[in-house]
Image 1 (cartoon, helix red, strand yellow):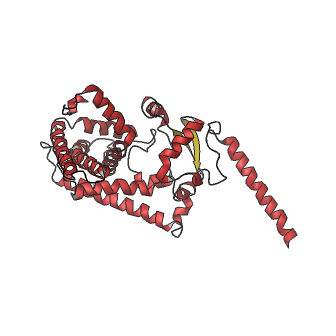
Image 2 (cartoon, helix red, strand yellow):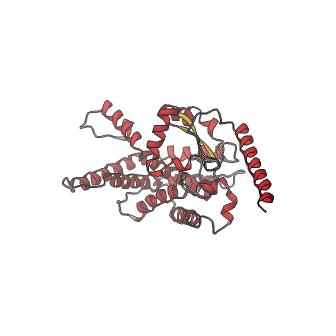
Image 3 (cartoon, helix red, strand yellow):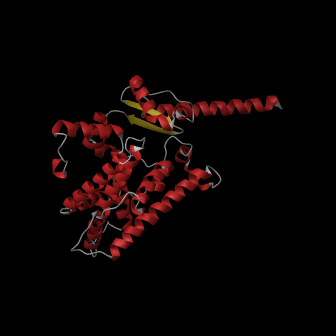
Length: 336
């Protein structure tokens, strides 16, 4: 019996080795340096989500600012410097906009612009109209500035009231960002504990948990067929479904609410600008600003919270402010 099984095992082993060798030969990224991974699982065991920034820093010291890593069956190129990130995302952004969608991101963020392909029908029009809506905010910028100053005063008061006691400043500042984003979208001032701000905070948190690239959920990206098996990674699949439902419920509810109260002569926030564009498209040959597109653009704007939350970006902004203005100067939007 053992002798009969042995040739089968040898054949399977040779087939796997052949598959891995062919995959290596066809890999367009194989010349990019990076940490060596294990077959099928890549560098997954070497990655701790709570220390990801430190791990990437250590790898950058060894392999340089451009490196390749692999999480399960998904290869990734990591750009680990501000200058290179600017070149990739801004200067040559069009060249990198054709990135293939990973399964979980498609499920959770499938309606936004950030993860779409530049060749997708309607992409260029939606992008142009999204920029038009933000620029069209116009006089609302002054109103937003007043709101930001009011929220900032409240934030400083809350910090001062602690009277030197230990506190989580990061949590307070994140609440501040959520208030500003809510004001940008809806044109109204909100308090930290307002349900609208809380929903934005929860939305960003749940999206990050649902598409966490260094969790076991990465298996769903490598093997999408597993999504059809409800028993596999049931917790992750439940998180994805919960996140999608919460995003749809929160944003579509706001879209419907603002449509019902829409007044072309009183545009309050970016959402009103997007609804105006949608109404202007009525009767045209190729309308692209449907409710799904509006929801996707809103989700993209909310996603910027995580960029603003990055300590490195905060430090660079603060250093720039300190180099240009006196410490007593009140920062205004015109100072940008």
